[in-house]
Image 1 (cartoon, one colour):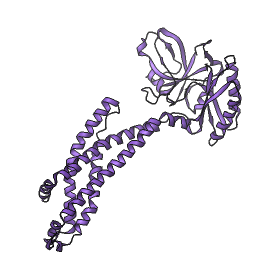
Image 2 (image 1 turned 60 degrees about the vertical axis):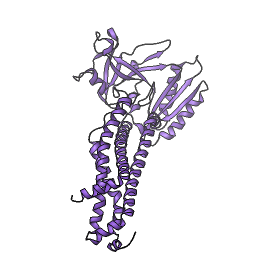
Image 3 (image 1 turned 45 degrees about the horizontal axis):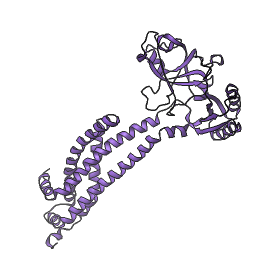
Image 4 (image 1 turned 180 degrees about the vertical axis):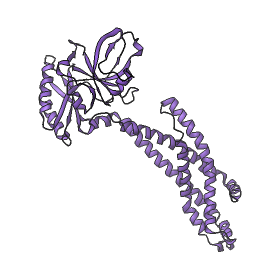
Length: 404
């Protein structure tokens, strides 16, 4: 501790270099803590389970050109072939898939007298009796959809389903007391379009990763007939690649339609999260580069200091200073600079996070990031100064008698 005063006074003779390194440390702390927070947040979002058997699920989107084509029969024919392909466990026509960025949302009401602004929002998936198996979901209560529950939705026909399956999250949102099974809910205010909850499944996300009601979903027995179909199939492990080729070949045989999209679910999820994935990669590179530059800056300042004070160091050695005394001198010097920068950087971290959260809704930085970031940069500074400090410790005492 007795060295702090002389070291601080020595730093005043090189104020500009010390100030620049302190500001660099402050800037690094402010940017790195917020960047790591965003990386962790986005990575956690990407890693959230959708509820599907992601590795064994594929999807196809088709468009029908012939308006006179019997779409009901076309769907029946397609399902018969797709479900019979070797390796296919289940296949369905559906309006959307989880984490796709595009789908159907709706509100549902538990009381006929509820106003329109009190509805519970959910993601809506139109499936048939193989929806549960295709998505790889587990029925935790009630029964599955049956063929007799199915209705058709088109420009000419718009029958309303009488039953629905709901996720556990939606069941809890509708009936917090846990008695959702068998209850009647309403698709419109005033008690219009009643539907009975016949089953509850474990978990499935809706189509929008940023949704506040992400896990509130429902599967309803509807065949959608709007000039094309999305088919989703699930295969046995290791069979998806082959099945996707065979299914595309079959779907392409019909010249009255085109296959717009052939994609595994994992590919679809990558596309949906492409912006977040790019951000994670970019910010990771920023963290590495900025941390590296800060470390090199500390090394450069210490190396310059050693070069400028070779005779002074030799004199200290001649007066009895040990090699460790010399190393400690430079470590304390960088420590003082680091403390200044870290204090400024802590304020900068909070300020930058406030700005980002206010303007871009990135979320509030957890306070524990600050001591972790401070500790990491403190250790970086101490490690960076070791090489030039060890060089200084090797300066011989005899140098004090030489001219520089």
